[in-house]
Structure formats: C-alpha cells, structure tokens
Length: 237
Image (tube, rainbow, N blue to C red; front, side, top):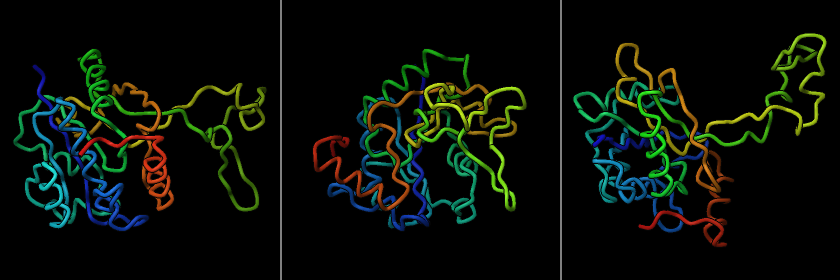
C-alpha cells in the first residue's frame, strides 16, 4: 500500500488577508477544513501543518494535525519557495508520496482527495505529480505587456495568422490554470535538485467549488455567502 502524508502550509504572514489561515469561516478557522478533509479522506497516514507561528500551531493541533516544530522564519517569507519548507518537513520521513493541501481551498472535500488520489495511483510511475487545474476565465491570448506608450501581446504568434487578441473566445484553444486545491507528488521529486512537481505533471480537474481559492477579502465574503445560501458545503467538523 502506498504511504502518503498530507502537508498543509499555514505561515502567519499573509499580506492580502492578514491572519487568513485562522480567520473564521462558518465558525471555524479556515485551516480546520483542510485538516478535516485530509483526515476524513483516509488517504493519508498523517496530516502535518507547517507554520512559523505558535498560535496557528496550537489551532492546528486542536483540530487534529501534527506540527513538527515551528518553521524557520527564513522559510516563511512572502517570497519563500514552497519546495524549501517541503524539503524541511519531509527530511527523515519515509512516505512514498506527499500532498500539499493549502488552507485557502476550504471546499476541497474528502471525496475530492480520494478522487485525486485514485487518479494519482492510476497514473503511477508515468508521472511525477498531479496538480489541480480549472479552465482559465481570462485567456492569456487576450493579455498584453505594456512598454512605454505602446503594448504588445503576451503571446506572440508571428505573422500571417489572425492574432489571439482578435479571435472570438470560443475559437481559442482551451487554457487551464492551476488553483490551490491540491498537489500530490512522489517523494522522489525531492531528490537531486528538489521540486514539488517534477517534470511530468498531470492535471486534476476540479469540479464545482473544489478549486475556489481564498486570496482576497472579497473571496472570504463569497465563501461565507456560498455556505450561508447552501450553495456549497464545507467538510464536516
């Protein structure tokens, strides 16, 4: 049986939404829903929270997660690479795979995780990792880079074709954008020059609100409204 650990990053220094990871949503800290769905899924042998703040660590433990000491401040800045804290947490562990479950996706359920895990195992050694994606609402073919008084398309297609920026959206190729719902990788991606994804990345297509990401204050308002209206359900606590 393949052994996996759930890693939940919850540093204290959120700039756009201060205190985001422990801000209450429907009566519980945001962090709690990722811990709950990970436990309920039955996929992981342990649920580990990586944080640099004791208050967050205490809340994580209260909701059933393991906190193996506080993350070093150098691994918890706004520009710190994820791979740095993942390598730190995974040092000395013997699981064959790890998942990164960010607290900012509270509508990721146990069923979501089981579906992703089954797909990960199905693909097996053909991939290094699987990552949650959804259809991009803003197509990069309609994006521009401003240079002085002029601008140029982000995607340069060359001459002789109708440029993406002048093409109907329905005629453009589908573009998928990653969301914060989940990433699952084989432990070997941390060998050599470490990575959290490796080179062979497979898509996991999120459904409904599984991939909703809370990055801004208005995202919290939307999440609260979805719960209040019964449009979306949070993992049970």
